[in-house]
Length: 312
View: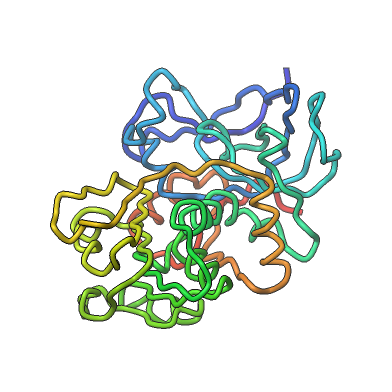
């Protein structure tokens, strides 16, 4: 039996539960691809899964391999896996088990080819984070040209994509971040950047069509006040509570990102055309996955962190 290196957890907990293990290489079932992973994105959901704080992943899923997004090369195709061939450069968002490893399997319909003008380290920033930003803005926020949107957490993995997608689609963008991240957010094209330590966003913007909440808590509660009647609050974290008068006549939704190769293809086309620029902030070798998660959790990351699995 052939084996591979994988970053695993056998129990929920802090960074100390992360282990480097040798496990069997998965087999591509019908409709699936086996991807030789070149790079894997690191996301907040990864350490939430590790901590047991991600509702979809219960203890009965353990042990598991961490990681939700990969970039790599198609190694093998299961029967009925259409649209790809062995050797293709691809990215994909995968399920709760599998990205931090030398190989990962994924449904072919979740994968997207990557052109040669995008390196695979950069490509690994895209599948989960960009997917989430896209679906927040357009699937759930129904953002249209000429509308106004406020993005909380504009410098992070999801946020920095959301700012750029909204601008490409002709929206006016307000984006919030720390003092250290203001110049970075401005470089993404935001029309107005708000320092969350120095300004109250309620005093800067009003009558917005959409708020993208990547922060939660009190920030989410305050966000109702800046929406117009009929406006939408979209959260990736917690169900918006409409228990305040400011929420009257407005709608809120929390969603979980759904993988789609077709949607990824739209995003990749924008990147290839130079209209959207993924920000690769820092890389770590696969063996340092623990340090990568700790860095993401405790530092002010501008863009994305990626694990280097294989070097070409």
